Image 1 (cartoon, rainbow, N blue to C red):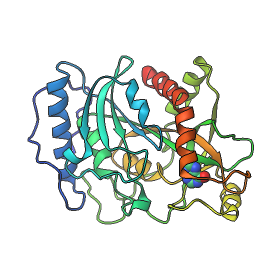
Image 2 (image 1 turned 180 degrees about the vertical axis):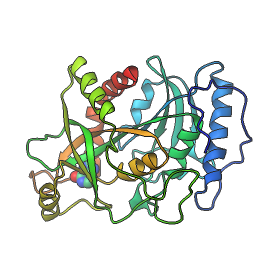
Image 3 (image 1 turned 180 degrees about the horizontal axis):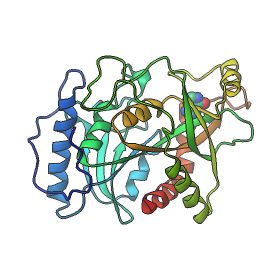
Image 4 (image 1 turned 60 degrees about the vertical axis):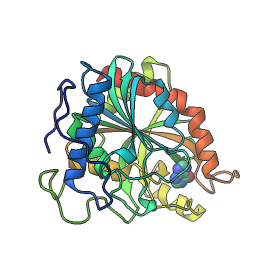
Length: 299
Ligand code: HPA
């Protein structure tokens, strides 16, 4: 892998070969990166390539509307990219400006419960190959604490992988990252501090806590929610952790914010549904957008 941080967009560094149908390979992310670089160079001549990639979670896709001078590339135009299949996830790479900063946004993700825990490996490694050094993940999550109310924003300080799966299972590509990547400080402490500072300066309330990933796709039972809280989780969701693992494996710095859309099953009388998740994310999307802008401006 040949990351190109700091490079200006220029002519294509390789041809677009179109999407592949086979399993993810290293060459897929290199081909996808070449396509992104070519399209961005043509549409945004002279602008710097993005250093920051952002993944927009369930219901948070409209945040991409805040990006100016955008270039949108469908996942179906990029080698090895997955096809999102869940309402609220549309499947586009958007490169543009958030404030004064160039960003690469993934509008739409594929979850482990769709059958491929490594579905986001090619997109994230592509972002690295395009020149990004930082990945900002967002997600919707259920609260495991009565005092962490729906509508809260939570910076993720650590995670517990309870999904029973891992995106790095299988042969390791040593050119991408090590066989046994460390997960200490997976959520970059400086970037957590930056989230806190951005929240304070924009008068946003920001909680901090541990995210537990479950496989899904069903929501938890009340007993499971009680167990996850006792295990040390503050919030539960079905995403993010595979992407953090993939990103740390290939050397990206990571930060993440969860939008708390509901109290975990059994912690309130309101039934938990995906529609509620989307509505909660939409409601909080404006605040999360402000937080992301503040963080990106401080990077
Ligand atoms: N559980 C799992 N995933 C979620 C939840 C939840 O309560 N809310 C949003 N994503």
